[in-house]
Image 1: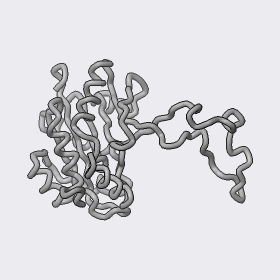
Image 2: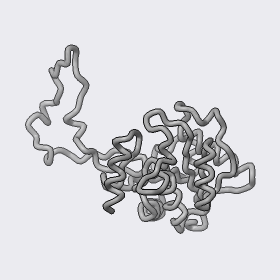
Image 3: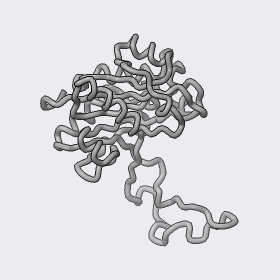
Image 4: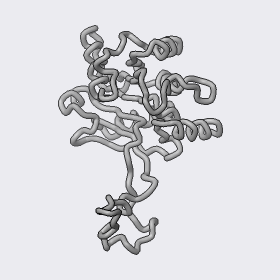
Length: 233
């Protein structure tokens, strides 16, 4: 709770995963991937409720054993590849509204970001508070400048691939760019429903994370990298 306003954390973890089957329960340094996010959320003093939205009985059992809430089974309609995170979050919020439990902020914590820890979560919430913001989203620096990127022309032509203004620039002379890293989405619930997006039109701030902690597991290579880092932190 911050300034007498309640925060609910929602961890989405559907059963299916085409690129890395069973990834949410796959063991990362000896414990299920989803455990990393659940434990970090439960340890955050600002969060009032930690909820796992899942259609997987194994995920549900793990979550309950750790102390997270699994008050419903995620509907099949929201468990496909096409299901959006915003719809999953709104479904959870609607459930609690019907139960008479009202929250002011929601924080979406995807289990595919296991190296985002309690300190990161707390710092993001404190950043929101310090700026009287309506949203905070985590980012990290891009590995390469997008100014050195472009689509290829017909026949893999590189005509006009780079703008003249950056052709002879060193990488360290280019401006810094940041990307969403998928680890933290924190937003005022009223504004979330008004704009149907975590990316609000204003009063939104970036929480910067290191590239090391920004690993987002989508396939086996990501998982292997996360395991190497996790074993050495």
